[in-house]
Amino acid sequence: MTDLTFRRDQPWGEIVLKWWHGLADDTGGRATLRRASDLTAVALAPAYQRLYRRLRAAGWPDEPWQNDRLAAVAGLLAHVRELDADSLPIAMSRRDGDKPRVSPLRFRRLLESRDVDALFTGLRRTLPLLQQRADPLALATDVLAWGDKVRKRWAYDYDWPESKSA
Figure 1 (cartoon, rainbow, N blue to C red):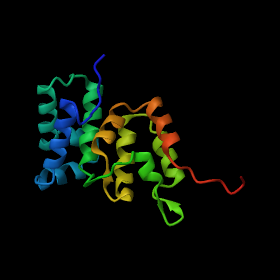
Figure 2 (tube, helix red, strand yellow; figure 1 turned 120 degrees about the vertical axis):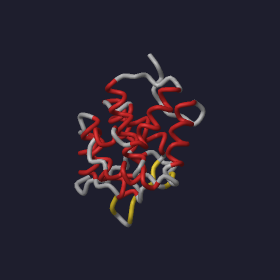
Figure 3 (cartoon, helix red, strand yellow; figure 1 turned 90 degrees about the horizontal axis):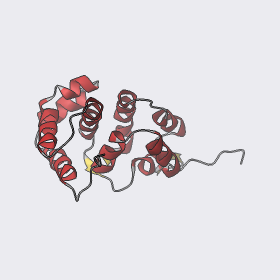
Figure 4 (tube, rainbow, N blue to C red; figure 1 turned 30 degrees about the horizontal axis):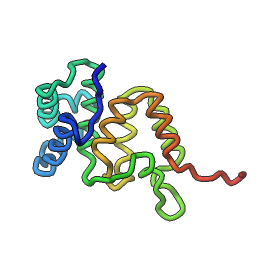
């Protein structure tokens, strides 16, 4: 099985990072992706098609489930403006005052996302709470691999507030 991850030291990771950085100059492409309300709208966007074609040229497998997840990645990365070195669950549990940026209830709902469409919608609503900051490659890898393993890692990484009854 092919390793479907995005790392700085491999071609797919380099392509995604270069594409993401290029969105800063492609304001129209970024805006189109940001307005995309579902994965079909993302897949029809020229900015996504550029990313998809570059990855295909680098050996990206042509599997429908992977393409939908890649569309989710592209649509979400259009909402990321700055790099954050922390993982998403750590960034989500970072405190603003005494409350986490993403409430435990909202975080739990993200973990309950059963498919990439639900995850896309949930993360699209969550990224503004993180000031549009995330690690693009970690986000891409987690969306691509979304399933029980990623959910469990996120659950362990999130800094759950202590309950009042403890």
